[in-house]
Image 1 (cartoon, rainbow, N blue to C red):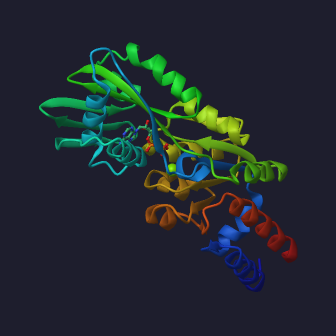
Image 2 (cartoon, rainbow, N blue to C red):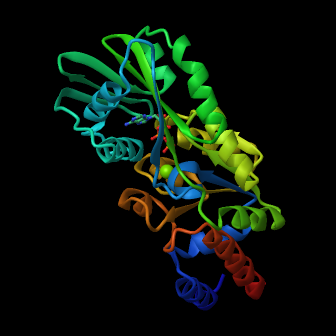
Length: 292
Ligand code: ADP
Ligand code: MG
């Protein structure tokens, strides 16, 4: 592409709220045949809310909520913030926790009132030998509704399940349909559980879902798609997404997301709307057409 046409394209992008960092990004975007979307904060608004709680037999619901919120207090994960806010809004006061530790892509652990509290995925509890049989059917019902189930164990025993729900952004479904009409395959990539991811994917018309992917494996999934001969765009907002954004042929960061994601990306969608991905591809196609 000539420097002038790239300058024009970049300027048009800026006017449309799309910051294009390099000439290469603008030149490659027209070749994208696959766009991978992170779920939380990218397809969804990323503002999860605590919606349900079910205590296991022998556990009081209020006590469960206090212990879980105490364990989550030091976590920066959006789910943790939803839980802490939701528990406080219910008029409960979580005690202080000690020994807080986060397990990336799985959850947290801490000691609260002298008891070991584990909060997160079924895998997190299963990893330390806790029998989650009593919790998984409740968890499955929440995830079928597109909510993220958060399992809790106290003192090594299954203690209950909370549900956290995030809403799909208003224009996500329309943007995904527009990408598909440009012959781009759309794939969802998330650390969340497969059922929740499938429910959200169905709401926005995405057919292919890669779920329960640990943060350190997100970039591997991008490389695997590239290995199929695809030219891959990745759209994400989180710290977890940064390696995948860097691995993609074109990385697109949600402008309302983390600085780490923005720095790893080639393009920033300032408004955070997925329609920016469609605009970026159209702009690249127009720019490259003018050149030939
Ligand atoms: P995502 O790709 O959806 O942003 P992450 O990779 O950050 O997800 O986390 C994957 C899953 O691990 C979450 O969907 C959640 O089930 C669990 N998890 C991670 N951190 C926490 C936490 N602080 N509290 C509860 N669950 C958590
Ligand atoms: Mg995210």
